[in-house]
Image (cartoon, rainbow, N blue to C red; front, side, top):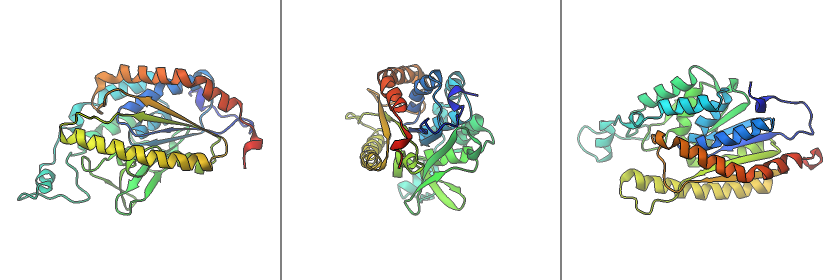
Length: 296
């Protein structure tokens, strides 16, 4: 069992949450944060993840260590995961004969991605992860944010990452769920609702590509702008409602990184390590400065 997952009963110890934003493969940059918390023997009480952050949260909740996570992601995150186009959906998007596109369609067939997620998580269930792990998704029919805290882990992570129009949504318990990014790319409010004392919220920030010259690059820019706006609003509200400390850590990347860019993994982790090194004292001060008298 990981050191950071060992719980102690004293209420003088703050309840700690780690919230990981969306970001494709970039949430691997959270590995140095988990290593730091382990080295300091700091327990984690709650993991909250969205989209790419849900994959990293789930891997941590499964008990994988850093080397195992890097090996798994490097093995399954290949460009081939997103190479199987749904030609009927593509024709439908252009309103051509024999085409069909609706709210349950996607331009990419998800079979390979689902196989990769099953390779990582098998038949594990969300409610069995430790520490407690919850995953942000979106009900694409109602527009509501949905927190998944039970059910097949593979389904939960896929739904949280199913970005429209590239990937189709997934039916989970009678609801059609898609990318959590649409409603909360950094679901800090969920940790506030669960009365966490110290919340470490990590944003994996892509710059806007001013030279975008393809459909996917332009779409990525739109998602970045949308996600940034939602995150700013929700962070302001969360900080206003929270009773102790929210530490916001933005891991900056100079250039966009795609999910299949596994050759970038060393740079992603190095970027995370450099960022966390600058924030270690702040994290420790927030945890050590906690007093139960601060709680409502």
